[in-house]
Image (tube, rainbow, N blue to C red; front, top):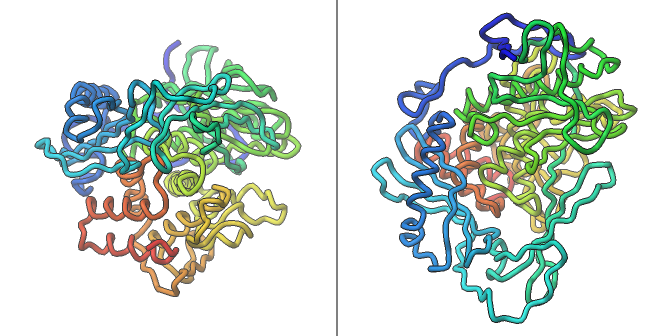
Length: 524
């Protein structure tokens, strides 16, 4: 079938329940040389890379990985495996590595090497500073749990031999579970656990019609967006396994604006994926969730009355339930952007979904979900610092989470405190959400797009914001070049300060604002 591209050929009007057309779609080609999409961007801004250019950088770094390991004075049993490469406009590269030790994966051993254009190493960001010296043979071990793999655990404490077992199942609300359980190979005691399924909530609240890319010609079309890596949307028909059935249509007009037509939720999901893709490409120069130009896929109508949505990195896919009574599909812009941003985090920092790193993981999705909502410029779902404001999950019109004062939801943390890592990640995320709001807009009272905010600080200080555009660039750079799998709030402060210094200078107002915003949430 011939690709149908709504941006460059005839445009498709899609009737759905809740959206108006967003702004023009980006059509700028991405290359490895020349200026980025933002001519005045700081030199440390990530350069937009084509998929092939990124692949070449990864290939080159992989060829040099043995030499890099020697330069870093790693043990002779350790090997580096390139995971990602980010290149700045000034030629600086940030190469992210995973490690193996005596052939075993090292969990929590990831690191990022920063080099100038001339090849001079400027520093290394490590998930752990501890050296690895683990006996892998000739030692007495507990029997491995059935289906477990042997690993080296380096994320907490002294690196040790361990087993990792993935336990699949279903959570209480119907969300699938892929629980990673780490046990000490010598004692059999559990060290750590985290779930690989990342969840969130939302509701489609569009009005009117939107225009999206589909594929096909004549009387045969599908919800496959050829201009965005081939992202496709599937109908699970209330099932909970498999890929589902690709949405197809004879006249390229999809949905009727109500839940009576299954394609309506499919259109909402496709639109959410579209604006998320465009945001990352236009604002951050990132081509797709994985940075390789390949699209993910979306599944709608998951389960029966499933009130949630989730990202699963193992299938590289986004899944939406239909909400209470199958009447409110969870397919709004901020939900799509939130969940797909979990994929961006998995492809970059890999923040483990537990403890403080899990709170940062969840906050990252709220931060970029909010950023995409502002970027979309949807007249019926204007940008705001409220999470899930359209869902009415509480039954009283209140949002799910508040970024200006997270504790208003009754559970989230406004500021860091001892034990924050023991709080559910959806609530410990409030610390970083509050930081982002303060950095963007500042403390005190303010009205934005008709929404009134009043953001306090933990120390009573006054914080002056630098604007959301700069704040989101700082967070993205920190995520992709300074955060690691085990980054906690203290290290997130260090990482964002480094990002602000790179982008705007160590004596800049932006750098000082980052420090002030963290102080405002008790991270010092």
